[in-house]
Length: 436
Ligand SMILES: [Zn+2]
Image 1 (cartoon, protein in one colour):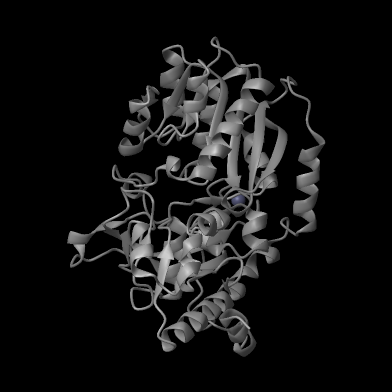
Image 2 (image 1 turned 180 degrees about the vertical axis):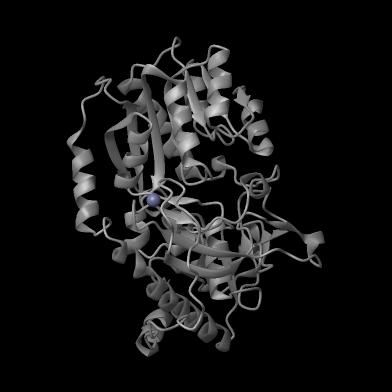
């Protein structure tokens, strides 16, 4: 019997009255899309630091701001969204450390997308690909390599510099109506506009989507990738909730937003990235350039069957995530009582949500490791767990390796398979706590 299964048997289910004695807020503000009043909490993750605010070792004695972290659902349009509390420019600072190119599977995913799009939409040296949130050029490099003109739009200076070093031009700003108009005024229009993992991060969704309508050529295609809220609910992926995430979309809510801005979905693909994402292809409404795939209705039907059109479906998550926290703590406490040493793998934002919600600090986890040198020699926000290089795992030989980047669990198991040589085991918390 594994540690995890032994613990599961002794876990007492949590009464749903936890938190019932807190005063209920009359309102959490208004829906960022339809302006209806927000009253329903899908997940309450307590007070949390900003998930990407990694701290250098010399900041160990400084205070750290914490903010309430709640995901709300609009009972009018079903858009799941974060409670408003901070401004985007505070959250995404210049030393923002996420470099997409540090994951092999993510790079392969980007290359496949580029090659398929070039074929499907007939892109050549007369076309232009404008990527919104181009990060370190992890995607545009594959178009650039084929001689297709590209432009990245990226507000984060450190990642934009990495792209520029590869010869990829970058316009440094947030995307929205203002940026789209500025670019159009200097003759830039797009045949293809990929926007991957960014529609969750924009404070003003209406301004952002309107920018696509402005910058897209009449026959242009925009494509968006985002974590599918259906998977968040089905697989309890509550750790993907953090302050920088303003939205958790279903196809239905996203399509509704596009309609408001005279854009239409003509195709949708399911992707395994980030624990289950959607890639949505979009054209100008009424242009009819691309026939609407039957996959669109298929996904909408699945969402209705999963109850995503009813607010009650969203509200059940809160009890489930508390049970998961208790299971995780049980396994970690038992391991510590047995004298085991625990390390973690990865320093993703979602790991910070999980660890801060569970109250797991350097009292349980000695250190975590990450391949991204920009994150190394820093500490995870809130929990002060140091981030080191992956080599340290082989030097210190921990008994348990908690994989925080569960979406890349297979890749990590392969890379780190040598931990089995000293009896080390992998552990993962999503979709349930397991020791493998
Ligand atoms: Zn709404």
